[in-house]
Length: 78
Image (cartoon, rainbow, N blue to C red; front, top):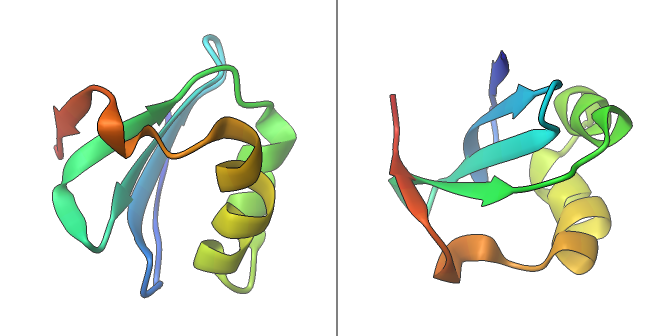
């Protein structure tokens, strides 16, 4: 599993499991809740990690494609 802490006004942290392609994100609005994005390709995780603005990358490349999972299962932050 890979993890990244973001210096962002939108995202706190993200983890990615390459074997299952599961992305989990923690938002600044709810920093103790993680939200799952299934079947995310590795290149999108890598793009998020290297983006100048993680929040903008999330909005442009993830939210529109994968929806907003904040209504789904929640996971406590490690």
